[in-house]
Image 1 (cartoon, helix red, strand yellow):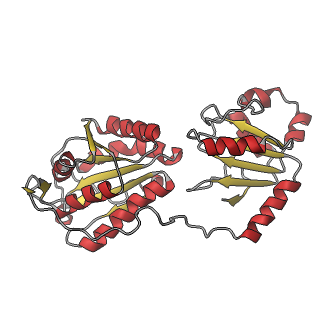
Image 2 (cartoon, rainbow, N blue to C red):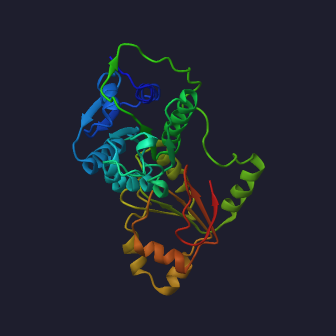
Length: 322
């Protein structure tokens, strides 16, 4: 059994072909086509949580634990706004969430109809991508939905798909809509920058190898054998100092994980001696106020940040984003 709404079938189909395993639904009426579709999908686990704010944080936790994107479904109106705290958290913590909001059709917007707000781009400051679907534009909707889901997977963050549904909302059918075949899902690069050429990398490698004081600062990070191995290799170089937050999931006897204790105990002269030639940062947010203050007062000559998504100039000395 399928929802009769083509847009609802499209959303369920897109989630299935991108291997979305879990969807957290908050009950409503306008989102009934999505609820019907997900409940009848054998490939997706459905969880129901009434309160949207709680649902969003619950989905956030699942995505963080499994390191896989989780979808959220809500009805129209102010229900959607309750997702915002968790979306902001996902945005800054690099956690993939797919927000699926039901909306009223265009003819019911801005006329005082109940449970109606302007849902387009409502999370624009803390979202990787927003998609606003339109009824009757099958191929365009198909491409937009898949590109949006791929963005969440590629760049590890929240995306928003807004889906208008007109009444009737509860009709079902036994006929599945045939959608175009998706070519190489999630295999294309969505990064904004062109890859560095070998000779360009050589410039950075030479600068790294000739610098006498190199500091690596690691924020929130998922456990990773690859990253751990790379850090172990860096620590063989005596000119490298590695500082980590307790949430970095990186461990080594030479690593300093009590950042505040280190900075607090230093004299002015010792701090000046610690000022790095190169600061290499990656991972999520840095909690330590001491290291932020230190690096702002004594900025690195070069700050390189590694991230799929954005590079924030936290220490006012950023000069390259990998």
